[in-house]
Image (tube, rainbow, N blue to C red):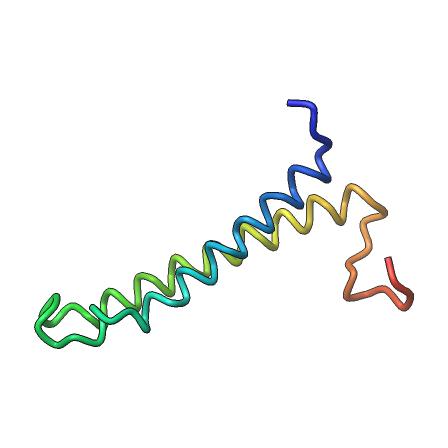
Length: 83
């Protein structure tokens, strides 16, 4: 693997963002809105997809921390000037 840590972390964060959008769409999927599909399980399916979403968000944030500490350790939210 010849990519830098910054390239790897940035690439993974981008991929996870795409996955995040797909997971968010689960609650709007036609099968979730069809009463005969998965009877009585819609709420649990949505809840579990939201838990998965939180894990994906956490992974993206942790990879952001890899990038942060690979720079100067200061969060982009704490900066007064652009990074």
